[in-house]
Length: 576
Image 1 (cartoon, rainbow, N blue to C red):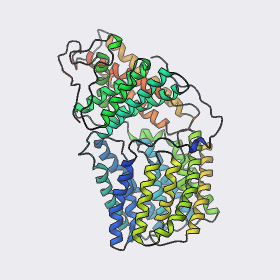
Image 2 (tube, rainbow, N blue to C red):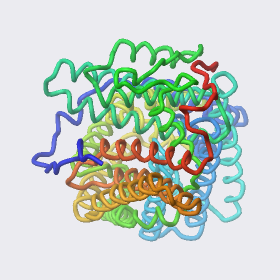
Image 3 (spheres, rainbow, N blue to C red):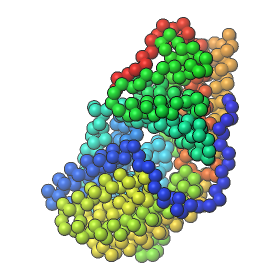
Image 4 (cartoon, rainbow, N blue to C red):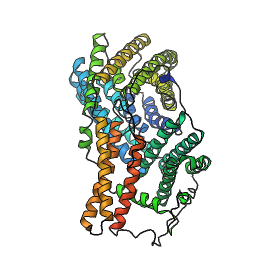
């Protein structure tokens, strides 16, 4: 395939400070995690207030915070992801509680916390759980490591977290009856809007075109991920959404011929609850005749290829974890050193330094530095907000819970604009949680949090620089090469008159498996920092070409008739 759009090396020359703090546009669904976490935290906490056992709220909050996850997943996938997140939260909490009940040695507890953080980071990256990925899990397990426990208390505390987690699962699934295809619609709308922005930028020309193109390819890639995660059960709505994503891809291929206004109109309609708009013939300009069902052959081919890819089982988890060994090592080293440094400076509960280090690691060194700047600034402003809020929170248990709910809402509402802005609310939230067992001196909490934040950011960034994975880029290139070779092999068999059914089937499965591996490898590489930009465009183009070859292979096997002779009708519109 053509190498058009392949990434070129992009060396880091400077580490930004002001740019890291610049505010962006809020997420189009910022209110969903914000409202969900409030709905998940409030009932268990208020019940404990009524029972005068607010000291147990830290354990129920561990389960409640699971409501932050999987808002971008289709509901069938969300149900499974939320269940696994809750189990992962309970597993980390169990290890932390047992460790806290067996020893009070701070060095041992920091070591346990660092190993837990590394495992949580690796598993979340391998399974692509996020946002907020491993940070919430690490915060809960690290904080509970330094809460005095006895072994006899552990089952009861875990039961509280499990009950709150079950409630969080219900909260996360609550919108499903009202908008069963809401996540898929939103992902498709984002792809259409991004394609429209690129088409408009390409028409104008200028420096913003490259950035708009990269954002559009990433949005299309994310839309396909969402639609593929929606399951294999037939759905006219999902079929219509897939055709709209293909239309977004058409706009990427020929941006100057696309109509940005029409793409935006489709995006607005898809975000609603009405019928999905009719797309017509997206390739009429290219001279490709529509099929009897109204879909052009190229579009039918790609959609059929997507169906073939959907049939391929995911790679085993252990094979994905193997590539994340450098990430786990960096996290374990950075968190352990941050915790030990905080202990050396006299911290009694160094978990915040550990959590700060764990939260830094991003896709490349520049983004890791930016996250460190954002974390420090957000936490410093956050401790000032805590000092202002504390007199109100200490008026009584009810006001304390209300302040915690307000901080939960504010954190999720603001973090989409910039991580530091969300941290302004996360910091007082974490400090208020420490007040649940009983009020503590505000000055000591503020001082300790500032020191731990600075230590965690400095040591965590140093670990990111020291431990790198130089093989991440090569793995993506190898995966792209594997897809291209598998596609060429399948194409040769399709055009060979003497190709056997067994050879065609082997080629089809091999190509589909290579496409799935490419997506997994590219996603894993996005969790590493390296000095070469991730080639989003090449990944999407390789997937698109592979989907069409998969379709040709399926037709060559006789599994479906050629669309030029088929009388099959494919519905253009679909009800939600």
